[in-house]
Length: 630
Image (cartoon, rainbow, N blue to C red; front, side, top):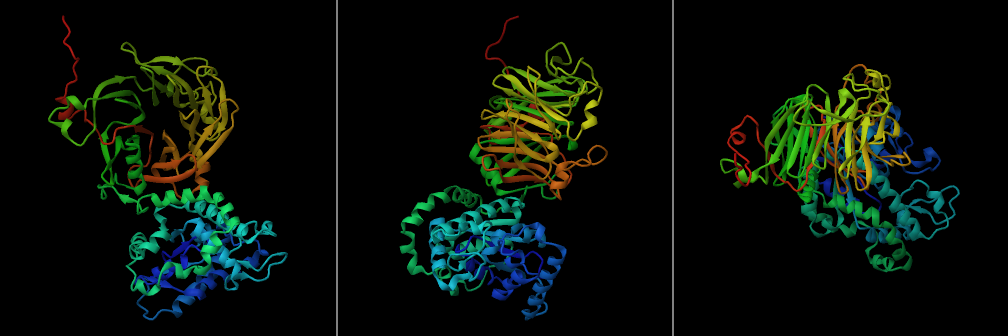
């Protein structure tokens, strides 16, 4: 096996303890390290050092991984590996490498080695900066003794973007900027990788219990346990001069700059607080064509919110309930013909299909067969089934006591009564008549308070099917009831939601979660995700975004998301909207390729959805408190 398969790179700001972790992982029977010469190869192959750019910086991106650079680098690494192989049969050993410069190279390394694993080592900035200052003040750590135009002492550690602007500043400030710039770039780059490709190690845990922390990292990387860790000494012996650290940490200047590290340090600590493994875990139906995998953060987020998720996927005629089952995630399937939009409000749920609306109520207290004594904290029994006819029903939402529908085929919003298929209530001003010819393709609606506030549409057209003329960039957001178009030029907008006094929506063609100022029309992209985005639920700072693999065929060529991501996925991605970062995901692996809508069941941890044809629904009865006379 090629020893450049699944290499492992340790990434961290300087003086974070990466040398210790590097040497520890290198003691795994499954690892191969090259030491200083190997890292030099990574630096020097095809002039990868900063001299190739006139000392620009150590930053490397995917654009730097040209085919020629990749070929030269891989050839040099293979040459060094061959020289260090004692047993020719040992070709399954994986390369492990570490240098502070890798923290600025994640996209570059990812392009060269698409199957690489990354370990981010976090050390508290107070201690890291103290060690960095010591390194600057020690002749042993000089990295670039001569830099054109640099007036200060010999440069140490690594060259960050914009390093020339630090000329004349005290060493402590330079070290702080190195830490800030490196950590900021590193966290952003790691968030662009699939969560199963990287993990976080804790310097404090390495110091307190090195065997456990190294073992945890090895388990994630699928490396065998290292041998003779005790021979490495302690973590402190692998960083800058310990005897000077306390004195440096007490300096006034260092104390003054520490507050600037607070925000990035909190982001890193959040990653440490996440479940041990970020590698997706299979759901129990691991051999099923409906199987899925999920990151550990899905379970912890659902536990934190005390909630569960509903997902509709018409492609497989399923309504899926995602529930936390201990530390695992359970996907509970209910058959429903082509489900579309989902409205969830307390003890009531409504689910649309192309031609029907199904209503459910939580009736746990009246459940038959002792179901009320199970682990379920809600039981949604079918209550009503309203036939609308084929109105191409999209999203639904409760506005007060009324259920509103996006009747897409009729380009209108509607409600239901006992006498009619549906009751048209509003349509965009540019649609001149009620007709079942899908003029603007309404895709979604949201309420503001107890009224409908906004809708999304794929075009401003009054001609039958006219929205198709500008399918990829003719989408809009419309205020209700005024009919004012508050945003135009969108790529397939869906799923508007009013949350935290802001309007959110998905620009599906971009795979983007967005916010919109309805008054000024300014749009902000929170995060772009690897799939066709449709279905959105929000809770606090978290967004649950449904993703689908891209549709193929006429009319779908040229979607922006197709150029942004080489591979698209289907599932639900969790996003921290304040930081614009991916938190985790539940990803469907085979048969399920589309998600239509996502709804959060707030305060309900482990619900049951009764099968309308099953015994539980048939033998459970919800009756009034008092009998009514004739």
